[in-house]
Length: 331
Image (tube, rainbow, N blue to C red; front, side, top):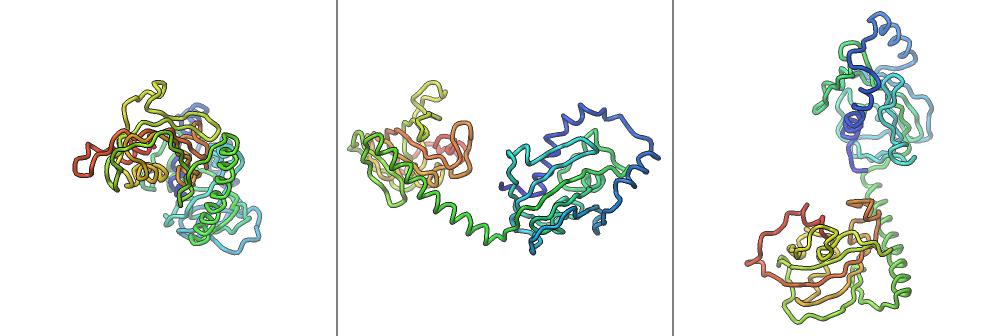
């Protein structure tokens, strides 16, 4: 999960404001004396951080490292306002912990609290609405009460702490393992379909239905293509020749410039104009674990494209190029 702690906290609060506002009217205000007593009772057993945040380590883990900025942490989090749950990673992520990279700490931000924990710790943090209101980009919602000591309570379990170097090594190992997994799946697919494709050094496969006789693209030239994309399971997810996807015009992109997935950049440097074929792209040359649309393309999904290279425009005569966001939606 590539979001900062601060961004995730602000996002979760913003997402849940409507639901909470429906449960309690913004104008509802408890008596000052009652709130003062409740605040005192609820804060018993808590320590106070220099910023004023209250915290209590409920149970101790066996970890030895406290997270610092740039570290990656895996955490379970639940935010509550009184008895109302605002956000829960267990619910949002099917019981899995959220992985977040620590950012520079702003006093009063919930991220400050995680610096008091080690792996295995469970803790409760009370962050005052008054402190949150001072954070850049934070918007006080109608149901939040300033000046009365109201807090958002964060129930947190710190699952793991990894340095940036440890995270990079882990990602490299996972990518290497995924290469083997993808190739095994592709080999089984080729055997089932009785296919004998060519393989590139990167691990991509391709078959040629019709060999073209036209120009071959150089780096930076614009390729004009028709395509239909489907998953390894055979489910179509995009096409510029099938009207059901709503765009039937040829698709143009600059080859080898990182404007599309890596498999496309590689494939269209191999083909000549007029070529029709199929490219089989392992997940590491497609979207990897970060699917642009999980409903259409699974995480670590192998992609298959039936393609036709219609034309190649030299770099100095290329038509308008799509921006990176536009292009990646296609490839």
